[in-house]
Length: 224
Image (cartoon, rainbow, N blue to C red; front, side):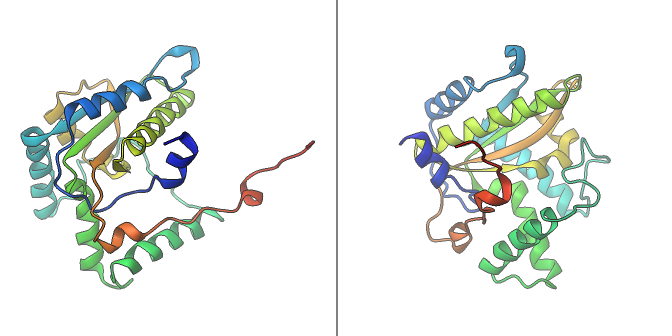
């Protein structure tokens, strides 16, 4: 699989099979992603890879708190979205939710159904592997973009190996619980988790492909 095919076929998977992913595959993905660019070669990323008991324990801890009525670990590590989204971003976000919940037959006014689907983020959608990405608190915007390129490289490397994934910034809401479970130093910010495994081809949610803006909406090309 070349990189263009990986870009075209990668998607956010929201239903996984329980099929195990070998440690060797995870190491191959993370090693390949380590070639991602970073300014000054700082490589400002850290990652924890969990499976089996360690992952099950973390999921169970977070889910028990959610089921007890807690929605966040006391405060935010960072704001996932700006306080007020302007256009065209607001419409894109609305359309994405409309597609996703429509595929699952969850009505807009079905608060309970939407909450259950949100809870699935913290089950990692049943994935057998969870990756947790962090960055040093002293890093700035440029290094956060480096982390994003590393995470994208992980997504593409996983796709090349026939695996699917879902990058989940929602896990930053549970940074204290996750940090304690992982033994993550306090000087690191938990940016996101990633579910990794084999997609369940029979779940209709995996048929959703998020729309992309046409090229002329996002790019200016001159001089050709």
